[in-house]
Length: 384
Image (cartoon, rainbow, N blue to C red; front, side, top):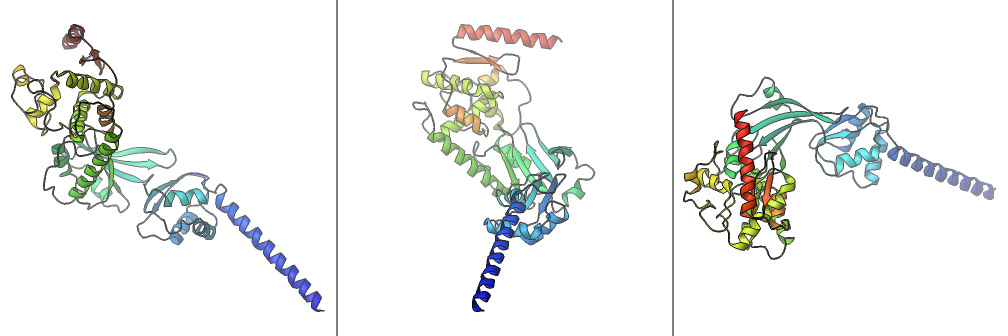
């Protein structure tokens, strides 16, 4: 009798273990296989939200069929405590595993409505855009210059939304004065900037911020990022450059930034100035003259006069030898990289070529021919 009981008990245990193993395998398949979502959605995870709440959101949106399995899978993979706040794009057919990764990894929002405060060379621009989950493309809904016009209809209502994300973007080549002045009109930021940041110390980039963030804290983030970029690229610089410090690299990079907007030209432009520094030839670059006149506080808005090319300012590289005393703008990573690893050329001159780029020359005679061609192009354009 006892043998029969033991045998039956063992059989029952095997069945239970077998069913348990099958249940685990089924759960694993449910967690990793494509999900039921038919159309992309933008999942908003509030600050302080729990995984349980998010799993119910996903079930309500039709992205998961078993919220409990979603929670168990996140716990099993060690990600249940890594939930990030933000708005995350969930694509059609996304598995629970893919959704978990999206809401626990970078924390960078990938959808929803975003206000981007863009600081450009000429002015600032507020651009509100929203990601259409179906097309996965951002659609601009509001666009205006906060320094020149009032906010358009609908902006106040939009700005009051709790799920609105904010971003501040700096263009390459903006000056520190421009950045501080434009940030004053970013109504979602708070606080004053007590001291103008050193020219060149701000990294042109895109920064996600929250409503009510301090302007000085944002400036500090920009400076930290620029310092990190400069440290990284300085360590990888070409040997033998006539640059004695990171500050001199930043100065040269800012000149490269202001001289060309053509990415593939940066290395060539940098090579011209490196060659001139090596040969003791003055840099003779117009953007430094302009900075000496304006100190970065406004665009000049006109061409340089001959008298200004002879003006005695600390930045006039037609008058002074070597580099000016400070950067003339905030250069981007690519221009810093070009200054520290320029192309190998014998170029000593360049002038506009009429296409948006430049014609480079090794000799003064060749350069004069290029200048003559450029003047012909200017004359033709003036006559049209």
